[in-house]
Image (cartoon, rainbow, N blue to C red; front, side):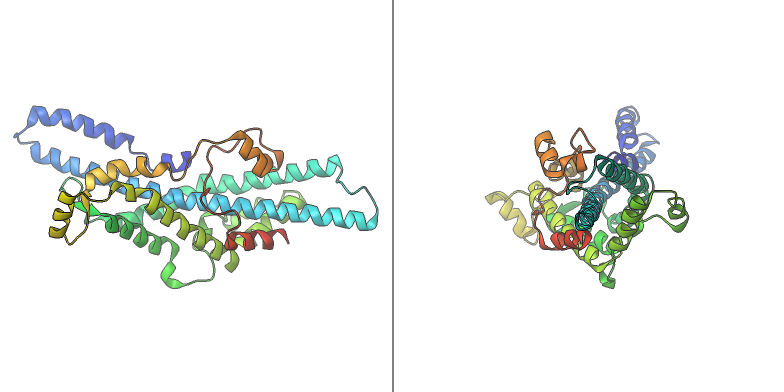
Length: 325
């Protein structure tokens, strides 16, 4: 969350708009009025683009983290089970792993998590924000906040779908995910990982292989479809409530669509939809479900992304099974 907010911060724009409001009172009707209004329009359009960019990027980042963690936890669990079974068959040690073995697994998994998410948060997400930002700029270039444009629910959904087409390359129907470029580091960075222990190297290599597989691409696509649908139904659709009788008369004059000022939609969009992605973390639930990510965390994750995706969703279950086995 912090990585995305850093890249889409609108604090500077909001502060300058406050300053402009004060200037307008002093220079109303003067020679500078035109320049001030032009600058005000630029700031509002920047806020518009960054707000949509933040929203779409948040969905992508949540999906990436959710699926990559699913892959790595199952890779580690499968490896641990196979080693235990091999030790039992050879009767070299008891059925339960030694404390040294458990420590080795925890140490290796910490290394893998650190390597994976350091790259995602320091390099991948900034690059993803930039890509989504460019796509958003193209989609919204003809929508003017200060000009008084009105938007409908279908307009907002259309923005999302067009940005998705650009980022996910959905029209190309490829067998691998277009988002893996923001997860897997380039060759130079991967070569610096050779000093890791064998177990960590195994999990990381297998992670990269699975992320480039059709199974991962399918799970990612299904998760994204569910998430964007959830965003519309339980998120920004609430900005367009069922019309009253008077509203219905107005809708008849506007092709039957409920429309709201673009400025109002933009200013309320983030607040209205953030609840669809975050819930107060429960220490008990988090530790029970994930064992604190194999008991390596004493506190729960700061949010519970994708909690609306069924735990036994077929595509995610298939990805988990392949990773484990």
